Length: 332
Image (spheres, rainbow, N blue to C red):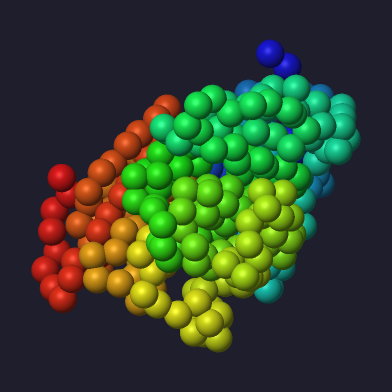
């Protein structure tokens, strides 16, 4: 398998935060280049070092950089999209510009070519018991009883191949039926709410913090010929936009939120406001090491765990809002 080097430029102050966020995306290996660390070494080196190569001396004024390596396949493409969304979010929140330029550069290949190359690995595949995910550039017939969900993620996360998305769809199909009112928080390519509508949901609200993702989600909904009057897609941040929270409203039967651990924890107090009593919350995008931590936070807001699934280091969990209760139940 071929691998592509991705250099992410930041500042000395941004390295720890960036590395922590990358780990929450399931990225375990990276290298760090930081001028401050090298200069500290030069100041404190002992007599064992008589000579330092001139090439290394260039590190004394380099731009801080975190490097990761991604496989040139569909999983790598999904991860790159997650990294890009992470950087856009960090940049938007870094009003003091303390974390540097927060840009990713691919080595040896332009991003557009790389994004197109991985399409050869994205073929139609089945998810759960009811759906067949089909890229928009492929032609195929659905097996008996399955519904085709056509998707073109473009630069937004969500082909359905990443474990977080697949686990969400598997849990979602058990809960959605005709008449379901669905809220998709962090919709990305729109694959979850589109899947929900194809399974029967007839009232949907979808939100993403990225304007580009919201646009792509609408385009994918149109590709699947969904009635435009039955879904609403907005760009915004429910953690800081009270008007958006008011527009979303409440009484939802199901919420799906495929994001990352820290954002899920921050949203935990808001989830109950959107759901009806006994409504279902499906959360994903959680690395297995942080599952218990996220669940403790969410359960503290009157949720009980109904189902939890894990696949290759990723977890998705289905919870239920406790009707009229302030007790906090333990996970099953």
